[in-house]
Structures are given as structure tokens and as C-alpha cells.
Length: 538
Image: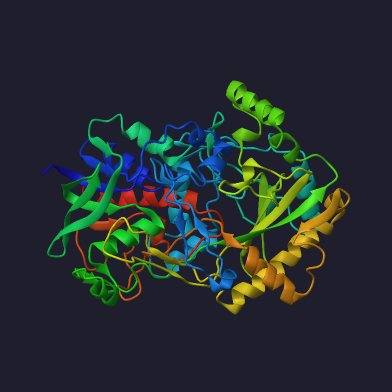
């Protein structure tokens, strides 16, 4: 049986970074097990190609959540990356670190080293910010971040003006001094190509002789000797294989796959494991529990000015933007659909924003079955103002259904299951309408298409956002970090409580969700986690 110093399960946003940093000195051998295949696909590398990968089983786990009472019993689609780079290879690329207060709260909960000031040097070191360096931002790191200010659709300026007329300040950099306000989103691209974690971290690491990457390798079980993790069992091309870890096994499968693999390996709720006939290695009810996710909705308008609909819908427009992208690596296909956005508070007494805005200069009221609506915009000039909650109080869980590692786990989000989440979303959708009513936008709006002017009362607005909301793909906290084994899965050094030589390093360790998109913080978790591992193996 082959032995490596470290086995990293998952090559996603955190796993790619872990593999890169652990192998950089040449002292350690690193094996990366990735259940999916290569990221060298046209629609992965093309930024707007995520419209194609949204339902593609070749690169996407395409999970389905349980019917959710909070979402009108809808069954939500949960895309997760199943390829090198993980979800960073199929996401919308918006780069948001999170609020200072988010990380300070993590540290205050008993996790030393995770406060904002502790993490800021790592955030700066990992990035190459096209807009330049300052006291908050870095240049020269592996992860290139593009400033889209001069590339966004002209309608974006009207959105920014309207939001300022509604009382929000303009914010040049959401990752700078403060998050509140509206502005243009920065994205993880470089020269018109997606800058996934695989491109930034894993591909350079793969050039080293001490890094070995196995694709199409589904980890099925962590191997233990007593309480010590000593290896991993995996399936590849129909064959069962095992490999040993001389130092540590590191789970970087993400918020769905990491708790799933722990449970399959006998680490999780004792009652669940007993019912499924899985021998208990360590009982911990927190494995798969405490699921948090951001939930969002779009308000869609018919406009009087051209939007991306008029370019992306007709065949000649698709040809035009396709040629622009292939020849110049520019145009709509080189961007995210979320050109701009922002952060605001539904209650001025809050110390940080609790809602995130998104502006999209296109609309998809009439989606085509089986593909993400980006690819078939409406036949009239439409645009959307979307929003999502930042730190909802609702909690769900992710639990395995059987001992078969190929069975998808049961995902139970419990969206809008608290009055606080319903109340803040009600206030938030009213604010979206306020933005749309400001002169800069009102003068170019023909009509509100969704939900439409007939939806006015609080009861109707609540019914509408329950019916139309869905995940914005930011699940966290299913292997949460904390000092107390009775309330957490990993300690502040990301070691699994009660076990040896086993860590979880990915977004599942977040003690609580952050204010904004989770990819930057997931990459940061890989960076910080790898530093902790290296400190322990000097």
C-alpha cells in the first residue's frame, strides 16, 4: 500500500490551496483525491460558461435538497463542483471576503487566530488584486482578482445611482475599509479566463514531483487504527483502492462531502450510524448539523433601454459575443452575470450589513428547461435586482441516507424557519422596490414583471419570496469549528475533536456564515489551515 505524508480529499477551493502550500517546501509528499475529472474544459475556463456547467453531471454533483416547507415545499437544486477546482470552477466568481465582524465573532467564540486582524495578512498574501495594493489589499499572490469597473453593462451605472439615491453610499472596494454600500463586484478571473483555485494553486503544485493528483477517485472511507486516521479507501474506475497517510488525512470535500465522508467512516451522530449499520468510531452529533446557507430572490423589471437580453438571445448576438470572447477575451462572456451589488442593513441599529444585493443587466422570466436561464434571456429588455440574506438564523443539516458512498446525502436546509429570517427578508424586498423607485431607475422601467405590482401586502410579499427564493450556493458550518467538542466538530486548529491525524479544512468549518459570497473565505481557510498543518509538522 502506497504511503504519502498527507492525503487531501477534494481539490476544491480549500483543497487546492492545501495541496499547494503543503508541497511547496518539497519536504512532504501530498496525494490529492478528486472524485471528478479535469477542469480543462472550455465552459469551465470561460467565465460566463457557468450557465452551461450549472446542470452538467460531468462537472457538477447536482445535489437536490429535500422539499422545504420554508420555500413552499420546493426542491432546491444544489450545484457543487465535481472536478479539479471544485465549486470555484463552476461558481459566479464574485470575490467577497466577508465583514471584519464575522471573523472577530469567530475568534470571540473561542477560536484564537481567526480574528480579522489575524487573517488579513493571509488574505493579502493569497491575492493579486488588479486594482492595486493598499492597507487591506495585496498584489503578487497566486489568486488574480479582476476589477470590472470599466467592463460592466452601461445600465449598471443607473443601478448604482439609484441605490445611492435610496441612501446607500458608493463603495469602491467591498474588501477594503468597510463592506456597506453599493459598487461593482470584483471577480476571480485573469485575462478573460476563470481563475479557479485549481488554476491559481493546484496546477502550479502539480508541476512538483512530490504532488500526486488522482481524478475520478471517490473517497469512500477514512481508515482508522483506534482513534488515529491512517489512510483513505477510494473507488476509481470500478476498482477499490487504499492509500496510507504517514502524517495526516485532510478532508477538503466541502460542506456536503466532508460531513458525508465522516459519517460513512463512523464519525457522526451515533443513532444515525447505528440505524445504518455503520460501526461508530466517534459519536458526534454535530457532524452534518448546523447547516447554514444564504437564500436569495430576484425582482425582475422590463426596461426601456437595451439590456444584455438583446445581445445574448438572438443567434447573431451569441455569435458576436462568442467572437469577441475568443478573439479578445473580453465582452459579456468574460464577466459574471452579477455586474454589481452591495450590502445594506435592514435595521440601522445593526453593526454590519445583513443583506447582499446583486444587479444583473439581463432577465430570465421564461427559463428553458434543463439549463441555467443565463443562456436563454427574455425576448424583451429586462434586468434584475437580486438580494440574499447574509447571516440567517435558520439551521439545517446534511445526513447520509445509507452506507453506500454513491448515495447522495439528505440535504435539509430549513430555509426561513425562524421569524427573524422572514422579517428581515420582508424588509429587504421592500428596499429593492425602493431602489427601483428612485429616479435613476424609475425613468427607464416599463414595469415590474416579478413579482409584479399586484403583490403589495406583507402576506403576499412573504408568500412570494417563500415560493421564489432559493439557495445562492453558500452552504457552510456542517463540520463547524469550536473549542468545545460538545458543540463543534473541529478545534481552532481544524483537528477533528477526539481523533488523531485528521483535519477538516474547507467551508464546512465556518462557525457561522459570513457576510457575502463564501469562495474567498473558503480559499482563505485552505491557506490558514495549511499554515496550521505546517506549524504542527516542523
